[in-house]
Image (cartoon, rainbow, N blue to C red; front, side):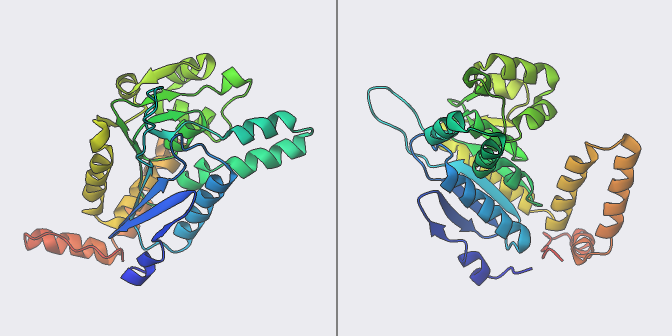
Length: 283
């Protein structure tokens, strides 16, 4: 796996959809569609393409996804958003889809949450503002969610005669439980950050100016540990949740045995004995 500066430099870019900011072993991906960060085909493709590249050969061990920190200063008083859902072009095209095949192709072209969820290393959503509909589905694809205390959340597809179609019907009940998920999905109501924290929809709440910093601090804590161990922990949680308890424990045992053969495990033991910070290399 490439770990040098040259491989990370390849991810330094800004385009109309996403701004990428490498910070050592951490990559920050900023949704660049202010002020609402609506998900259109270009943004969905950019996210899928980025995740495909990271799955193939990543020089990073953690990813933060956030929205561009740019609020509208107009009289409406709207604030910055993580993402307020799919673009208006999606709503128009979906209403005009004349057949099942056309609709399937349309929905597939806008999907991006599963690409984020498929990454083998930890993903943190720094939810700097509102996360509505598909924007919330994207946030649910992360492993850890940090929200601005001013952020609002909604899964309002039912209000458009739809159901969530980017993984929301499956990820939401797994995260908050069936009761809360049913409430949010059927009513389409909007909730604040504190209620979201109380039901487990987000992990932490912070002032808007501190959301990204808080996410970076969490990433730093993760990166202080062994990168292989972090990947295996993510794998055993996500995969084990779909297994019986006995099967999940067997998977845990298998991955533990594999970790015993890694150089990172040797470094962890040696650094403990020598009373120094470990220097993990992902090997």
